[in-house]
Image 1: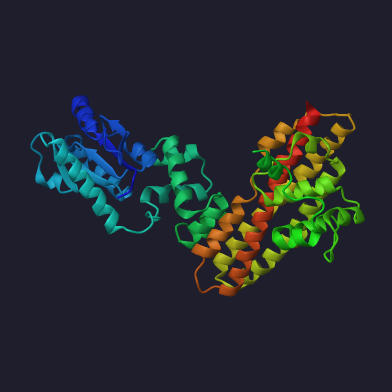
Image 2: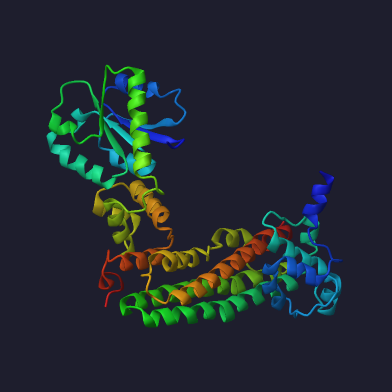
Length: 201
Length: 233
């Protein structure tokens, strides 16, 4: 297991959220990097912190936002989603999660669940961190090599400029390429864009 | 402590044999043409070779030290003694070397790859390298047309502009990024069947060039900028 594992908690009740976070106070390998009470800014935080685990109350994923949640899970496929359950939740919803924490679980039980998840994920992908660009990062990359500014990308993809910048940092880290013209070559080599879209004719 | 300070101050000394200096620090090889010195030093000391070529020994040692030790910072006294003409001349010679020797060398190899691979990829590699060359040329032109004349005015105490070296410091663009991008493209992303030998040649060239550009930037940051700041003060 790594020495610095990051968790984001998304839970509407501040008491539950704070209580759960306090479970990890004396666990050095784990830090709670962000606590949210709604899911609107979740994508931004995921991009910013690149956490290992996302603990979320499934009640926040109402039927109309389920699609959005699934998409976020696909975009951040290296984040392990864990449900934080305080009432009855349909099993169809729960199966989207790797594990379930119930609010009456003991501290020891919660920590052991989290540790198991973290060590599983490390052994199953016991290679350097995933370098595959996520769908979202690919969207940003394509827009970038077409010459769009951060602001234009943010408007087009409905994300904040801050999130665009975070995606750009991740793109640089994953590809090892810093300049836009270098990324253009990368995008062409990987058939992410067509020549005519970049250089005109 | 005293001892460490002395080592830090003069890692190379003028009584060392020039040949030993080079044999022990091969990255200094590139530096000699810029001082107009030719190899074949025999057993002459650094001071002797410098004298034969009309090069200021202190300045020569300062450049060697910056080149070989990333942590080396010349003392304010050393900086104050710098001869502007020698410094500018050194930097100009470096620019010439990059533009007339190193880049064409890389370009020649790259052209072989460009001509051999899928024209779609070839075209974009060509475009990428052209952009990089322009960036380097712009960077050098800026220094030669804007910065160096300003230095001359400073030394002559006849400053005609309100330009300050701080502006240079802030705008000192990084011309190494695209090189490392090119390296990544060659090593990771270009399909494996394209000119494997040629690619290794280019990779070696790029390594050498980026190490030298790094030292070049250090010389500007550790010698040129402090020197000018002392004059501006």
